[in-house]
Every structure is written in C-alpha cells, then in structure tokens.
Amino acid sequence: MLQPVSVGHKNLSDYTHIVGWPLIDEIRELSAPLAGLRVLHLSATAFGGGVSEILYTLAPLMRDVGLECDWQVIYGREEFFNATKLMHNALQGSPQDLTDEQWATWLQYNEMNARELSEDWDVIIVHDPQPAAVISFVPEKARSWVWQCHIDLSTPNQATLAHLLPHLEHYPTSLFHLEGYVPDGMNGRVHVVPPAIDPLAPKNMALSPDDAVYVCNQFGLDVDRPLVCQVSRFDPWKDPLGVIDAYRLVKGEFPEVQLALVGAMAADDPEGWDFFNATIAHAEGDPDIHILNNFNNVGSVEVNAFQSHSDVLVQKSTREGFGLTVSEAIWKARPMVAGNVGGIPLQIKDGESGYLVETVEECAERIGGILRDPGLGIDLGKRGKEHVRAHFLMPRLVRDWLRIFGQEST
Image (cartoon, rainbow, N blue to C red; front, side, top):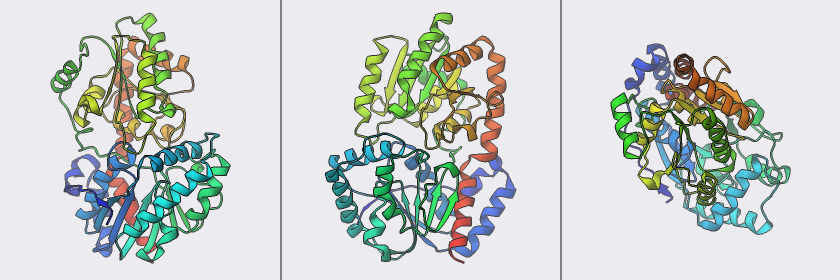
C-alpha cells in the first residue's frame, strides 16, 4: 500500500461560532445521504505547500460528517520530483518541457504507485500532476475519479500540456480554482472551486499580541520596529527577490523597517533549497532581513506569530495557483499587499481589503503608504478578514465537495 497520512480528528461543530449555523446545517443535510462513502485523497507529499495544508483539515472534517475518508501519499525519488517540478513550472508557463526520459520517469513512477494503490474506493481524488497518470493504469480501483488541479494552467507550455492531457481525459470529473485555469480538452464535468483555510489550525487560530511578541523575539526580530513579512515557498514564482527589492525601496523612507521571509521546504520541491540560497545571497547579509524556514524550527505557530505581529504582509507572486497564504495572512486582520495574479484578486478587493500590485515599485509604494498611515492598515485588515470569513474558510470547501459527491452519485 501507499503511505497513509495520519490526520487526527476535527469536529465541524467547532466552526459554528466562526461561520454560523446556516452553513453547518447545510453541510449536515448534504452529508446525510452520503454516509459511508469511501473517499481517498492521493497527493505527492504530506508536508509543505497548500495541498497538504488543506488536506490536514479537509480529510478529518469529511470523516466527521460521515464519509470514510483517507489520504495517501505516492512514493518518488529525486529523479521523479525533479521531473514533476519541471512539469509544474512548465504548466505555469515556463518554456522548458520535460525530456523524453523525464516523461518516461514520470510514467514509470505513476505505474509503480498505481500497483500499490488499495482497491474498492467510491471516489479517488488525485491532487495535481505528480500522480495524475495513476488512473491510466488502474481505473478499476475506484467507482469514480476526480482530478484536482491546484496550479495556474491559464498560459501553459503547450507541449507539456499536450503530454498530460491524454491522462487527464480519463477523469470523469475535475476541479480547478478558477475558470481561467481550465484547459481546452478536459472531458467530463468541470467544477470551479476555490480552496480554503482552517481558521482553527495552529497557523490561523487567535494568538494574543503578547504571545506573538514572545515568538518574534525568539527569532531575533525587534518587536518595537516595523515588520514586513512574506510567508511562502522559496520559489521563483513567489518572487522573494522582488520582495527584498521592494523592502530596500521602503527602507529609504523607513530605515527602521525589517523584513521576514518565511517558508516551508517541501519534499516534492527539489529546487527549493537552491532558491532559498539564492534568496540569502540577494539579501547580501542585511541584518534586518530574516530568512527562515521549517529547518530553523519555524512551524505553524511561529508563522502565525510573524503574521499577527507584522505591520504589512506581502505575497508578491508573479504566478499563483490560488495563493492561499493570502487568506491565511488576511485572517489575522493585517493589511496585505499582493501580486495581481492567479486567485489572489478573488481574495483581495483592491483598495478596500488590501492592495494588488504589478511591480516592485508599486509594492514598495503600497507598503510605504500603510506604514505612513497605521489607521489605514487597521481598516484594510478588518475588511479583509470579513471577506475571508465569507468566502475562504474550510466549512465552505467541505460543503462544495459534498455537493460534488452528491452530483456524482446521481
């Protein structure tokens, strides 16, 4: 069997005070006829990145409403993840396609993992391109299959997409975060469902100002000086180098400002360490730039503290599948400056609940404007949090999945 992921227990009722009774009641009503439905989530990694963040809450909540839900992770070695990272970048627009040998490696590992997949599921949900070809080898192992895409396919490398589509065409159902991400050639039912965050997870739960200050102190931040923070993978698409450039422009007016760049290193991202080191090099030893990851003992609570204590939060992505770190940040009621790409504009109403930017200069200008007017930052943060509450919390995602399962059973 593939590697099972232990997800613990969660109770839907615990979210009632945050999302309200009407949504909770709707979920209970939708789940009743689906009791006992056997659902498997299949993904490439159990830590690092948005997919695993979602599944650690979604899977136990599916169990709580009566589904028999499990999560398993595929096996892969460095050669496989090197190929799939290249595939991920190409599907988001990079001109470099996989070589014939790399495509063969991807298929070989999909076939190997398919053989290890357990049987007799009602629904198998395959997340992202890494295990997308599993269905091609063992379609009989589930009554229904769903492919969920968490990346931006709006302007893909066409050669890469052409290699992938014959496998995607086997799926009777697929999910995308945005309508614009759905490529031509998708068969079956296509659903557009944005992701969501868990407001009760350690990364997002309410943290007292004193606790946030204590944690920030532990990592050498001066809690009496302004702090700008970006939380994301160390990835060219997240543009941490551009964030450093924007910080340097802001520092001309606010010499006391500090920058924290915080990210988790994921098992399926072999380029991460290279770009982490490139980010350190770009910082050029500036003592006010703090570059941290999970190998520095930065976990969910620490991320929460950095975000909660920040004066301005940044997500200067140049490509983004959805950018769930934006909703996580805004949930702390802090002002957000983010790239005008992917799913980020769904999460921020420009000028009302945060700012959308295109360039380093725009990013610096918006950060400076908030630092000049703290009251503006407070207002942006409050409006942003209510927007996230209405649209991007986990119970809404559970409801959307239950609706899909209900359609698939008819």
